[in-house]
Length: 276
Length: 327
Image 1 (cartoon, rainbow over the protein chains, first blue to last red):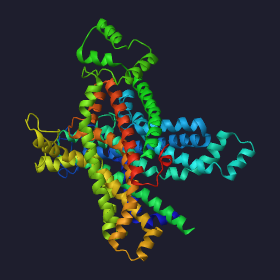
Image 2: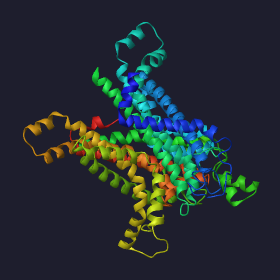
Image 3: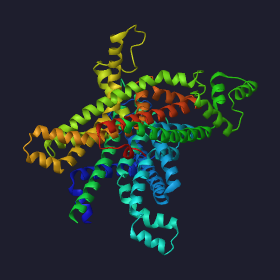
Image 4: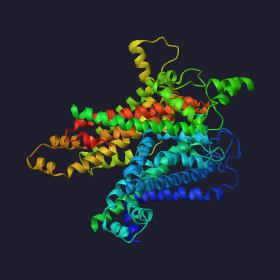
């Protein structure tokens, strides 16, 4: 309990947590508050915001309810961001642990592959991947994870290299544990904290990449995305700029919330370490 | 200089392996796409079954995957990237035509973000914990959260649509017969918004890195020693800043891949005819050879930039030996 209280004492963390809680509520309540298809036509097209209280944020070029789209978009952003980050951390942790623990040729090959992935611009890779496999939510998640797992892999490897020589690992070897069991049950859990510290940055990057992909028309066409909404609004940018600006603000607040909460966690754990 | 040469040789060998993995991996990924270049070509031009057979044979698409990969690698040795389907021209020519624009965009955005970012970082880090430090720190975090393409649209709404100060997109005024300095000025005006949209997110990054680096250096003993000797505050800040600047140089190389990716979206927003927009056109036209070529050229670009940054590093910081920079 005291960890949470310490977390909330950092003002940035409180702000971040508040934004994320709001976002989570939006994502969870979207099907209750706005049942039915958010892509269905709800009223006259291009209704400006704050004019009609049944459509508080107005309508887009096709007469769809912007507020409903915003709520449903929160679902997509959050789902893709969290899933892609989880996948990237998982791949990174496994590759990094294998490379660091096995050493030798396995390490060399895995790290060259990591280099290769870091050399190709991640967004270009995601673009190519989605265009090859076809846009759907799962593919977008995979495409983003493909470009972001390298950071966690490097951190995990460095951590494993330092843990590998500890006494308890030697102990596990002596009692005849299988090397893979040592790597994934003894070493990986202890190498995780610094890898997990990357999660806020990765979630934020994943949300931004998803938005950019859908902005270019490579998102899941059956789902409302903030990036897609911005692209939609772009066609009427001169007459109705709010259609692009409103989902963009939601995007900025979300990413900011993730960063702030992440900084809060880092600061909380840092003060705890300082005390002990 | 000997140190730099050793480094260069070691890195070149490693880079060739990495680039080989990139080529083979990308080739296999794009191979998995449904439909081939001939399908894409026929969709855009029309043609019968005989034509399809003929084209498949002429482009070597009736051969096995492995043969084609070998052919592609062999052609690469001769700097031949194949034929673009949508442009009906060699991929190399199309890419070389677009590359300078993207390089100009990237170099300008890097100059803006690195220059302004480190300067603001020094300003904030000179007085840790002060009001200006906190304001700049929070401001940069907010800036770091803004997606570049959205910032681009907002800049367009404000500066091109409302104020009409700057052009809405493109790289230069079309059909203007401007030459020399006039043309350079015209291009600069067109690039102002895209460069800002691309550079601001990195500005925030460099500001934050500089600030954090300075906070670290302030605590070191040699700063205490400098204070004890009674050095002026200005001189001490200069010492701190110079020591905090080095990690930013490394970041310059690491960010190049991301910036290249970011320019895809920015070029699309501002209709800048560069490599990024070309990538989008390649995706839209299912132009596999072109997309493959763009990814490969981008990877080479990233390798070269990182090499240059590492070379600069050995010159800036004499303590770094070639053995430490490698791997």
